[in-house]
Length: 211
Image 1 (cartoon, one colour):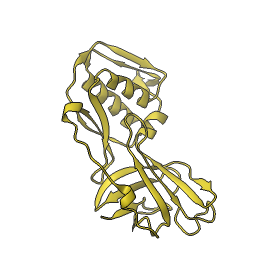
Image 2 (tube, one colour; image 1 turned 120 degrees about the horizontal axis):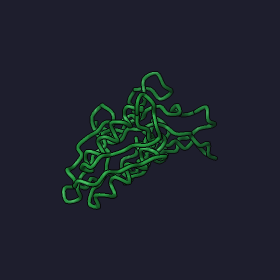
Image 3 (spheres, helix red, strand yellow; image 1 turned 90 degrees about the vertical axis):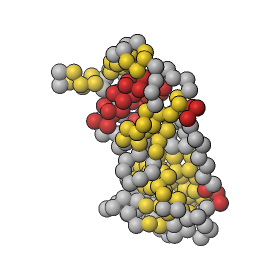
Image 4 (cartoon, helix red, strand yellow; image 1 turned 45 degrees about the horizontal axis):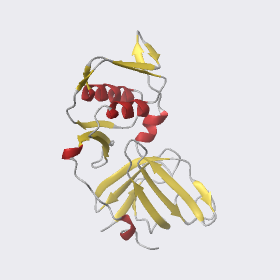
């Protein structure tokens, strides 16, 4: 079983395939959350933040993690942290962009920090919200959103897209929001009802080769 990291063409960590060992990574952690940041983190041996002994990715550049040729994570780099014996790199999934992007709705050509959802299904409201988030530049796709109940008119203001997505999902207690990172496109946000969810386990601790 092999892990490969792939960066972004034209950035510090480019689109070539590299193993954790090649990048002098001494640990690698992949964490999936519910309505919070999915994250890929690692510590690489470096002499300084210039990246001696390894390649440090640029801030906000894209990084993907592949397991046996299948992409299992894709995100963007937050600030690297200089440690005593290396540099800590954190790559965050699309939720990072959703929580950094303020909710707006266009009315008469003017963006207002509010969004109104008519009486409709929660599925329709989530689709409406995410369509607007994509229009505002959030790097994601809309995947499969499970059928849900119809709810009364909803109004939200002065919040991030992540805040409102979490509020909408609270209306369906057995709904699970999750990201599909497979394929080569942008990650897709999906909503699955709990009865239909299938668990997936990745044992990364056993897959990282020592350098």
